[in-house]
Length: 140
Image (cartoon, rainbow, N blue to C red):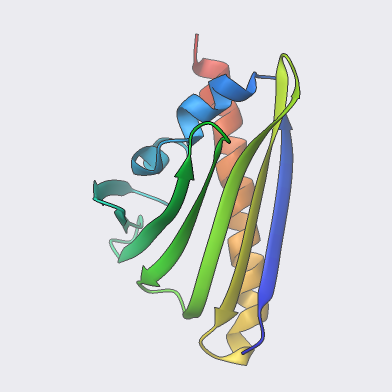
């Protein structure tokens, strides 16, 4: 099984603690990820619904508030994934700035699907970080 990788990094002019207060809650990603219409947590299982009504489940494998990162794994849903693990980390770059590093490793269900999944996942991450910028700007 070949593994593909997506790595996205975006700088923010907000403190790491302020950014983590929004992105650090795996049960509230619908607040800043446009491709998630709704979300609910059941223990470590995250149930999401995409805007088209398709459901998916992701397992929160690790959540570290102090280290400001969490890892989640795709369990099932409409995406053609045999394996998917993603880690979102908020890195302090200065007292009033930070960066989000969002990295995924995954294997497509079929090799032909991999290039499209790489592009799609990267687009989802970039759109989410763009939306996060708007949410942060609107936060007092």
